[in-house]
Image 1 (cartoon, one colour):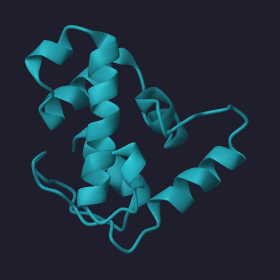
Image 2 (spheres, rainbow, N blue to C red; image 1 turned 180 degrees about the vertical axis):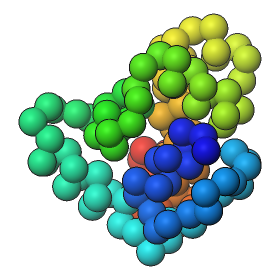
Image 3 (spheres, rainbow, N blue to C red; image 1 turned 90 degrees about the vertical axis):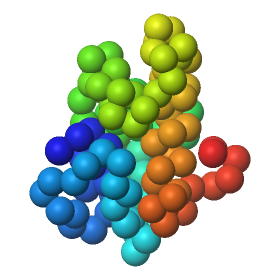
Length: 113
């Protein structure tokens, strides 16, 4: 199971144990923003999931290390030109995770996409 599937597992209904990375799993019955805001309020750290992939992963209790983020970027098809610059990769990755959550029915505000 890839890291994006783990994100969906944290935010959505149960998903199949094995799913190819390109398969988008539904989270349509879940208010993603409300869940993330609730987690952020309950977390002693000031995590800004709206702008930071590291904070988003930490908020979900997932590995936010560089290696994990690089693996997630590969899993989601990050362009090669962004992979060589961690800041560009992180920005792309954050937008792509939110975009995929929205594509799965998650209520991600347009300004974050």
